[in-house]
Length: 163
Image 1 (cartoon, one colour):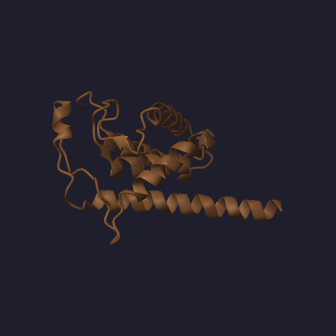
Image 2: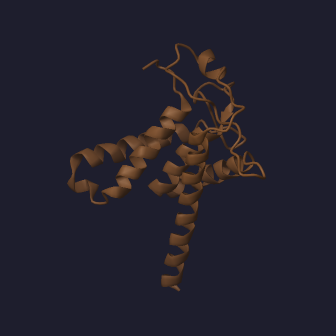
């Protein structure tokens, strides 16, 4: 809407598409699902290149000086896990490290930006407060961690079957 690539909006889109794609496994029989799969594939291919050294994505994806934002990272990485593309594994691992570094001993997820409207400029997104616990940050982080655990259990089961 504003032409600014806000990370959390991209995270919600990727996470939602990945959930929808999992719910309809025979998507090739339903053309709209093919569109969702290809959109998700293209989106994640572009986003993965923008991951920061700390494993997180910036609150404005394509603005190098944007602060690292945990809820967006959790949503993007959860979508990568659920998509199951092995080429995303290194990005997921970096995201996991970055997210775990932002969870306090009491389980609070830090560095989650507050709610926003559509901003007119990048500076608007960069001024969003990150000092309070936000439900979407906790929720997206739990969704990501659950996806990681589920993937590990599935791979472990598959390994047992092969052995």
